[in-house]
Length: 92
Image 1 (cartoon, rainbow, N blue to C red):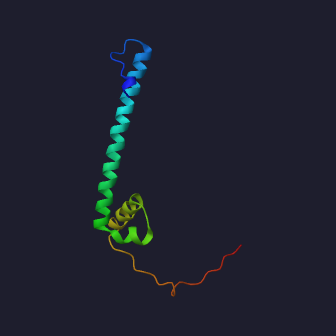
Image 2 (image 1 turned 30 degrees about the vertical axis):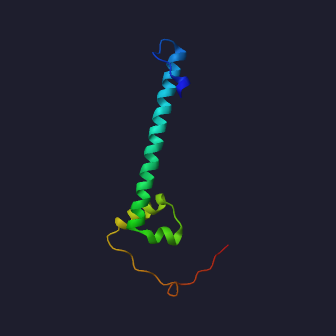
């Protein structure tokens, strides 16, 4: 990124270099922040609900969605046994 250090943008080329350098720096900062937040989130998921992640091999994003959905449900629905479900045939 050093070659993009333009000094004061006094012409269009220097202004473009200045803008590109600014965008590159912001991209680097945001990428690091995203990595840090994902690491923190994965740690929280391992502590809060390790079973779904281990059982279903879901990623942290999906695990968070599942936790949010489960947390917003006032009462967990009863587990339905597959033996009590009526059999259905595909009509094609």
